[in-house]
Amino acid sequence: MQELIQDAIKLTGRYASEGSPAEYLSTLSDGDFSQFGICLTDCLGNTYAGGDSNFLFSIQSVIKVLILAAALQDSGLEKLHKAVRFEPTGDSFNSILRHEDATQRPFNPMINAGTFAAISVVAGNAETRFGKVLSLLRQMADDDSIDYDRGIYQAEYISGDRNRSLAYILRSGGIFKDSVDEILDVHFKTSSILVNCVHLSRIGAVLANDGISPLTGRLILRSEHARLIRTVMATCGLYDGSGEFAVSVGIPAKSGVSGDIMASVKNKAGIGVYSPALDPNGNSVCGMKAIQYLAEQLNLAIY
Image (tube, rainbow, N blue to C red; front, top):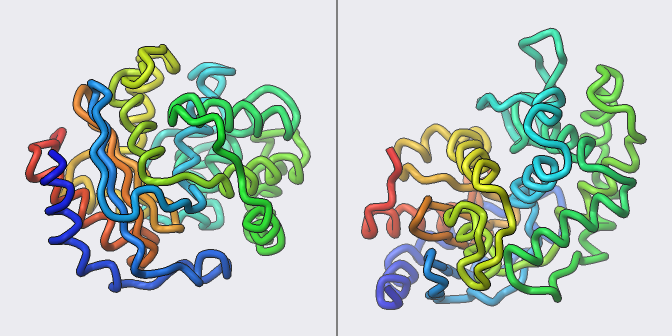
């Protein structure tokens, strides 16, 4: 397996310079294109890593998986579903809302509007909600030192006008009654959490192992919640590139605009990759090629 990881680094690393970094934050647009890491953690707890697998980056939209998990743990599926749907959308991750039902619910928890709705059903104030998501991430990644980057948080806050508009639309539609500032504070802080490929692979492995950490044996998520999260990742996890990824690769995954992707395959493994150059949909070009290579070599496709 370690040799396969090294082959993936060697064979797909040439795509690391293709695409462009996210432009809306200097902390992302200044990314080093030479950084490329892969890590796979299987459901027996074995970890195989290559390249810059320990390099830290902001988790960005991959945190939506953890927010969804925290919302399910706190409030259950029925209450969550009153705030957000589970339907794919061809729109970008930060698109202004369009609604197809009378409830005004966002399409799914993997876009920004949907994650605002999910944050609203996590119990507590902004500080408590952030603490719950961070605690869950630390448990799944088996690392209590994980924290958010204050500089990235400030940059997210300053550049967050579009997110504010989305949140006000949701609030005016009755999706939540909370302060927009509180919802967005959780969003900006959680997006700024620093992780590496090893962390992402461990998170994916917990989901793959139906909520049980392969490293510690601890039950972290209910199995039905892990299944639902994998399903939402499979249908909605790569922005408006989700359908194409499902056809070409065929495994549940969630991407972030820092260049990270976390994938999870039931009973097999979690995968974390990082490479900052993105395609027009906001997904890591090199990261997707690497996951596709591993999926083909290990026969991971779920369809």
